[in-house]
Length: 85
Image 1 (cartoon, rainbow, N blue to C red):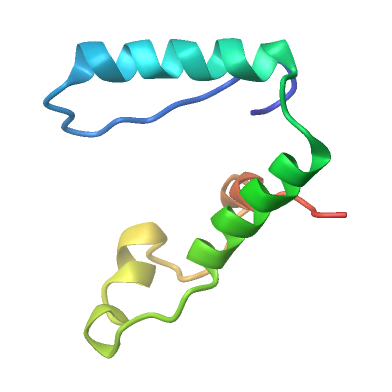
Image 2 (image 1 turned 60 degrees about the vertical axis):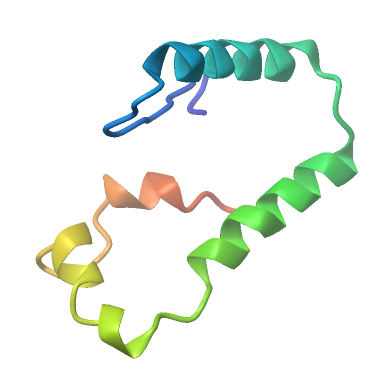
């Protein structure tokens, strides 16, 4: 979510109609505000634990090339790593 925009991604999805419905429900849920600070903290931990998880040796050579051929975080890429207070 950036400002007043929410972005979703679904690649090669065999259930696109159900996925779009889930995306809509997610936006409605977020707009409703029916979540606690603990929900937010747990969501952050979930996302960053996945980002910070160990990489299997067999996968180490592929990820940087696929993600960014120069193997560096660009300004555009940095939006995926928001500041956590």
